[in-house]
Image: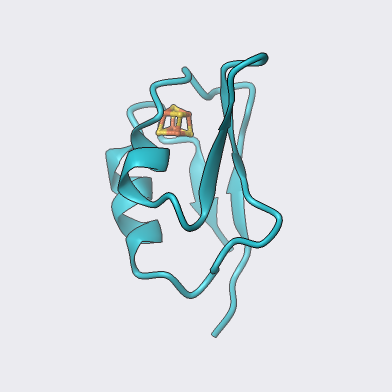
Length: 63
Ligand code: SF4
């Protein structure tokens, strides 16, 4: 089932671990050096959990 994935960009440290773990869902803005959820993200992708686990700032949440 589709879910919401939210990044707290204030907490994001710009490591790109989420993008590496799950490029179907996460993108990276080189100007702001923050990750974001892609507009066409596959919110059913299994790799989301991997990205959440790999985030050192623990700023990705699933709702
Ligand atoms: S893994 Fe977390 S801290 Fe790293 S870029 Fe992604 S959201 Fe930001």
